[in-house]
Image 1 (cartoon, rainbow, N blue to C red):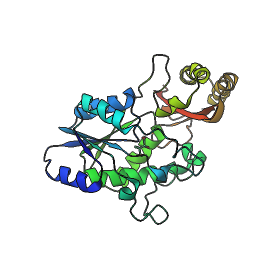
Image 2: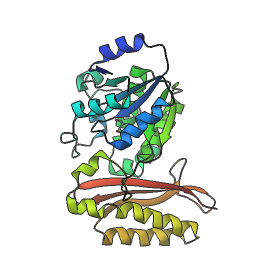
Image 3: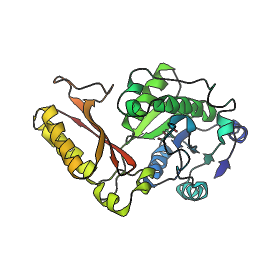
Length: 279
Ligand code: PAF
């Protein structure tokens, strides 16, 4: 497995690869959820490139950019075992040579400003920009993203379509711990007590899904779910039932729905979602 630490090294490697390439974009600190993305990528292309880049453009001023766990050596060991062809781990100065203030950016209108975008202004601008840059740098035919970041996946799908980028974007179902908690690098921030409370998030989504499927009024079911989360010690950022395609509020005519939640346990912000169909 090659570890490519600059754009120059990546371009030299990419120039001599003529088989298909799948990209798995990550910010590192890899867990089994990321490795499952690599497994899926291997089914779609001869070579898998995993990018590891903690992208400053998608972090707000008071967020965890500085403290975000950086574990490149351990990540590379896991990826070599899993059979990745290359890791692309560039420096910030390589990705943003003119600095962030003047950087050209990509913004997908509408969907970028709701839910996580409302709580984290500029976040999806940073995501769309880095993903477009990674597509241009790595030139993959396929790119794999986890559905845990459901809104991010929809932003990336729209960006790819709007800009006619020749990349097939594939979403991978969320990998969960045995108790239901969605795997995330940020789970590492939880104390032991918080980690014990955390599975309540997914359990509540499951209960809310059943209530909506059984025909309960959505607003009533959401209020009950919010009360359950609050009683379990969560501070809710949002808890919503939306349409899958554009994440707009669901009407009674919409069948393909997604429940989206962001909630704090202590200082840790957890997100999760559950897609389902209502008949
Ligand atoms: O989901 C992530 O890890 C990041 O948002 C991504 C897609 C790698 C862009 O920095």
